[in-house]
Length: 201
Length: 230
Image (cartoon, rainbow over all chains, first blue to last red; front, side):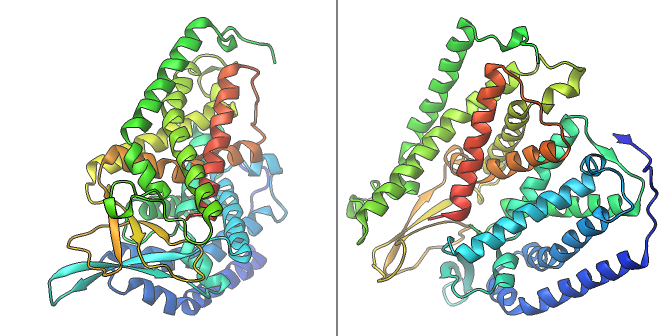
């Protein structure tokens, strides 16, 4: 992996702090706002890991967008250099797929449903119930659907950067944070892919 | 960009391409029943041995046809993608990494990784390899589609008075069903990384063109299931 020094070392500025704090606040508000949905999703669900990933994904959506904004503010390297940094690429790809998700919500193309495995103690068996999701807010919709698509896309982006020899890390807090977020989205994507029982599709 | 020798389409390329596509179609034929079940035709249950067309027969028939074509094309594309990745190992101009800046090669690499992941995951995790196709016998007025499909872990009997389930528990079949949903996102992410990093290098060879076509197919399939899942 190549590591190139940034031509313009970027320090953590007050504006960056304001943007990131705003994103953190938005993330907390988002998780609070979608809590009823998340609790509903968790009913009868026995996979603790999945309980954690849905709120975490909702929490990290604003932070991902904020980090992209912070990275693209000047002073910064050229755009071509920026978009060879894995952190920036991961945030950009995730942002594009979030836009797709927003479009999907407004176009109302997806007939949303999920299934919940419930334990029926009377007969000691699990029942699988399909529940159709209707009347979701935009935040609900994104919180419900984020996971697989952005994470898989981030994995593809990392694969392309690695295989094409474009992986240019920068020894700065922005790129490190972006890389961490990229790995979070990849782990979330794989988790959403391999962990049933409900499918966001 | 000068045309390199590896980009010339030869007779042995035609032969091996036909052979791997035949292998893919044989896979589709072996999993024909799950494909049909998933696409909405409930032919493995005598009581539902007709297409449930609801009140929108044209819509339903189109949906069944599109899903069937997508899954058969998936079965044909998977071995072809691996072959193209093998053929693309040579070529390019600047050593090992440069070759993968070709979008076709990147699409084949990303798709092959997803294919390996799906096969390993579906084979090693028997619970995850159960794919349920929900068959509703109770028409709900106003519903877009009475056909649900779902993937779940089931530990006990499913008890529904008005529903039944087609259970697809063959790992090769479930890998085939999940491949077009996941590969497109990985390919799209990889291509976005190339475009954003200004590393999109088209190569005028049949291998790269075929790889690009397969990449577009994966993206279209993923968007189909993402936006129109039923």
